[in-house]
Image (cartoon, rainbow, N blue to C red):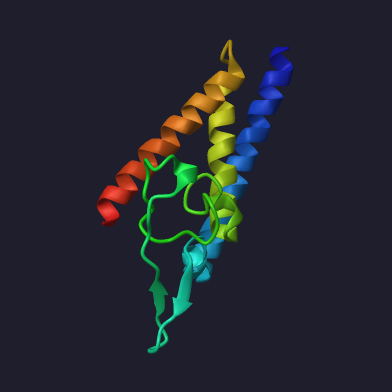
Length: 132
């Protein structure tokens, strides 16, 4: 059992390194310029993106209001990994990190879900407050 856990931990560490390298390469090559794909935008008259104003949505139970209108439900929160390659690799890195933390826990699934949820809520709260 310990051997399997150590092998899974090694796999998580490899995935963390791979996903960090890929996200960094995308950013260095200018690929992070696709970050806006999570928002519903249109091209303005002077060639700049125009972000549509947001409103509270039922699928957030009217508790959360994204900075701008989302391209599709949850595209700026839990489904951001589906919007562009940079976010996909970072989502894999976060999932691998929290899986590595959870491996030796007596309740790994609960530990994974609770740590990932705590991270996500904290990140979005701080990011949204600093962005506005």
